[in-house]
Amino acid sequence: MRAALVAEYRKLVTTRMWWILLLVMGCYLVFIAAIISATFALVPQEDAPLVGEDAARAVYSVVNSVGYVFPLVVGSLAMTTEFRYQTITQSLLVEPDRTTFLLAKLVSVLPVGLLLGVVGVLATVAGGAPLLELEGDGAMLGDADVLSGLLLGVVVVALWAMIGVAFGALVSNQIAAIVIILAFTQFVEPVARLVLSQVDALSAVSAYLPGGAADSLIGATFFGDPASVDLLPRWAAVLVMLAYAAAFAIAGRLTTLRRDIG
Image (cartoon, rainbow, N blue to C red; front, top):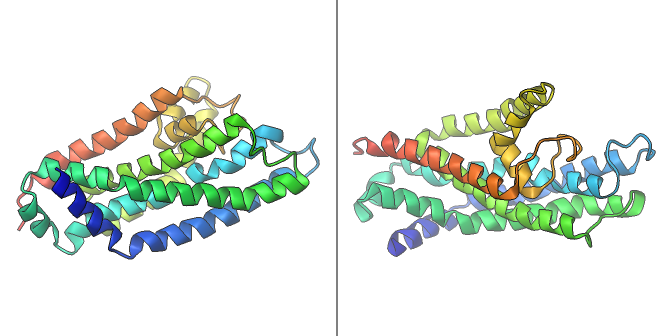
């Protein structure tokens, strides 16, 4: 297993795409966090949708609610690139046990996912904190709940990268995988969460969607006041995210990685 982990990690970090996406993610989150913080800080307090700690936590939560597409794509590329360039054959010759190969892929992406998380959180703070501090109620970076949310944001991004690998094992066509990820993260899930939140009997369901579980782990959401949005306990949120990764990985192992590969 150790040899497989080292091999998969080296394959991932020797490509250019992950650090290009890292740079794009950082720049994008600085911009988005600045825009979101402006909606809280540059309007009269009585008109602001959120104030104080709630405003700060909502701004910093964009590392998940907006930024999670990047670790998903990085994770999916780690797997789908094998099929696109037909390196999967050589990979399975080195590690014939396909379950071990898949597990190595899932674990090897975590260091890169953590780095994405650190950069994403720092970018979010860099974009959002100055305006909150100068024009709002403060950046709240000394608040324990805010700091824990930022630290857990790093963990959330790493878990997204793992889910991306698992999804790439299920949908091995690289273009199809990226299109599905973009459609789901930018349209399907946000719309589903907004619709579900309007129906009392279904509002709790949104917390079990991948993004809802990630917001629960951070303890903040871009989709409204945390007090009025259903969030899972943090331990449950971790289990839900791991369950998505496991479900995709098992499905990929029983379909894509079960076929003959020439």
